[in-house]
Length: 120
Length: 112
Image (cartoon, rainbow over all chains, first blue to last red; front, side, top):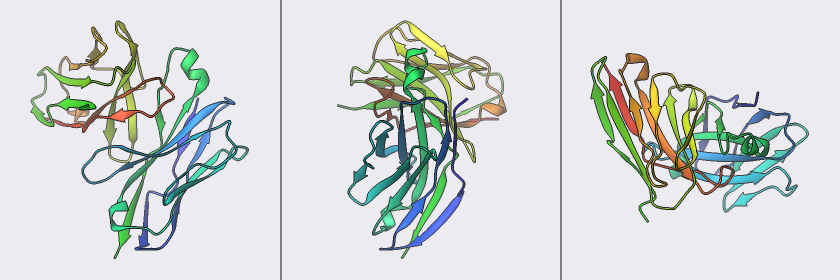
């Protein structure tokens, strides 16, 4: 069974500094997709970044980038120049491509989340 | 586009009552799903649908029913609410399963 593990329940960072959130996953599939979602206090789930496993290049979105290590099954999120608005829960999520064909199309498996606080 | 909408935003039920959480999307997405979020547990899949007329169970389906008569709507029914169903419920949709999933604003449900 696929699992997603976020080993840091809480983290804090000073404004303007860089922070890295960890995520590891376990799967026997070769093709899959990984996501980082942000959940601010408003409760809304917002996609931060997406990575396809077949792409070797790490995905980036402005101040957000990932370090995708397929062999190690690691998918960390780096936030540069942290801002107060980055304060939120961050969830790592996985969906396997084979799960699509097995009928469980798109069933995201989430980690338990990391609560990030950005301090002024 | 309104995206994914959910009603109500908050609800308090007594044990044994029934209710339906509504979910609708206007993006013509085939895939829709329901998750529940509990403290320290992340989001867990309750039920999902890959198209109108097709539904299946997720990780935690007990106590919940779903149906999908149209592409747009995917209601979640609690037949006999229990305190263990106190949670925040999210509906999500995507064009295909491995695309970005768009989430609704959530419903906070309390069962007394």
